[in-house]
Length: 386
Image (cartoon, rainbow, N blue to C red; front, side, top):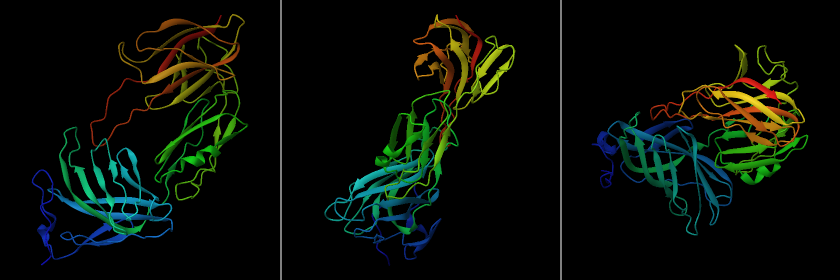
């Protein structure tokens, strides 16, 4: 008879793991294969040791009153499993990919690693034990799909179950003038390689990276096309992410009718832009960037604009409106929800100016009720340099 563990610390009348027979090992089906698991005794599995870089899938399970919960994570040992070497864990979640980072100590165990999904409230915390043991710790799972939590918790042990997940990277096909690059992937990014980001023709690039994503702001030049080179970015295992050039589009024409009684010329607008009933509309209900070239400012360097965000008075639009010059100078327009209002803006320099509207994406989680928010459509009734 297999030796039983103490009762698992699981809430809400949890079904014990060995209810179906503690003597029989069970099989966990995973993307990477099948892992034999005895749910009643320690798994005593081993992970590779030594200085060889390793990336592998780990799998394990714990019990609940809804059945057996399976835990799948990917582990990365960029410098192998030796004292002082870094270790990374990644896990898919409702908010994308979670990442935890730690190091191995002199005894071969790691510091405590924690993965936590803030939307679903699922979590995993523990460490790699002993000189070569697998990952041991506690896991929790939220059984509810509403904003009322029903958490179950239990001891979990994760063992090797094949290779780590194949690389998956989401890269925008192109950028609009002033748009921030955002790249997400399922592997931990080596942020030191973000220094290789560069544009042709050359512009200043300000990169930022954390976990399994990185972003970059590029100096805005609305009327000059460029390309951003991502080919030098690697993951923590030293593998190129396989990214190439992302084109940055440019405006090629100006608005000639500031009353918007006629459609704007081709090339005068980029992104979600439309004209109807004498009103210019920028954006849509999702995250977006819209850019429209208003043309050259006169020597007086002032712009009169009649504008509003298409949402109820008192609401806060999830977007920002502004002006950008040929040299990248920015001026906020402070648009608000409600009726059209007139504003006269003093411009810091002459030359061409573009109207930009940057919408902020509103995330919703399948584990919570989707959040409601006012539309971010920006409307301009008239725009004129005076």
